Length: 347
Image 1 (cartoon, rainbow, N blue to C red):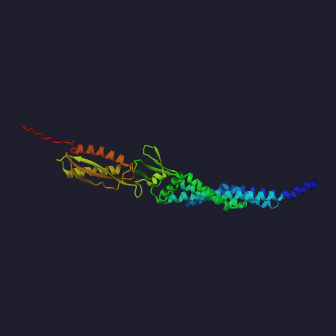
Image 2: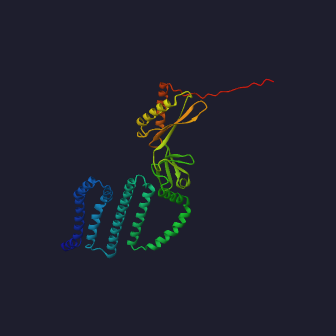
Image 3: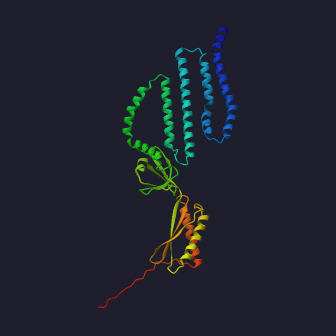
């Protein structure tokens, strides 16, 4: 009996001790080294190391276990087929773990890089999911090759099956590739305020596999198929410069002093630009007379708003201030007047 126990200890003792040492080393690393690395990473201004370490950190204990298991498996006395299965299982788990790390790192780096491009290259759901799928597919192919499954017939079967699926999902694939075309051509980007030729307008919030979401200023969400958006005529208010010109038309009486009118209107307009949020305080609004109307001399005042939607408080404040100032200065805003001449013909 004692000899059997001794034999068991000789056979299983070193592998078990190796596993315990590996797990203990992983715990110590997680408890002390990992804490210091976290502090170092958090203090650096380079944000990419945060993404890389955040993806690796959850897998540290698993990698320590797999390493100790690999070292211990050499001393385990298990029947040949089972020992081979165990080693392959450990390798598969390692490959899947590394695949998830690479996927998370690439997605995180893509998001950070897109943010640094000032919306030049948007990181949206369609791109992040595409990166994940590509990495996971490569990882699965490596796993299949690890367990001695030939990849070539699988790829052939996927090609034939993909053709059948593409015919069945023609509309879905059309929307998918239209979404890629929209993103790569930068026709619209998340955050842009756009208006379609069909009348819909709003802020682009996301571009997914099939739809582009527009958020109206009334807080309603419009979902537009990517294929339709790709072929639509789109007015993009934020394509180059988010600021745009706001025009307000005013009419004054014919007996008004036009120099006085221009001076007063300019003063009110400059005050609105400086006081109202959404206006450009450095912009000097031009005032231009442009028309002899039926009952008034008409002028236009041009403002500069930072983004679409900022024009509403600017127009409101300008009209209220100008109406009050005109009244103080004795400048008349006339009602429409028409002179009718009626001739009676006496026979």
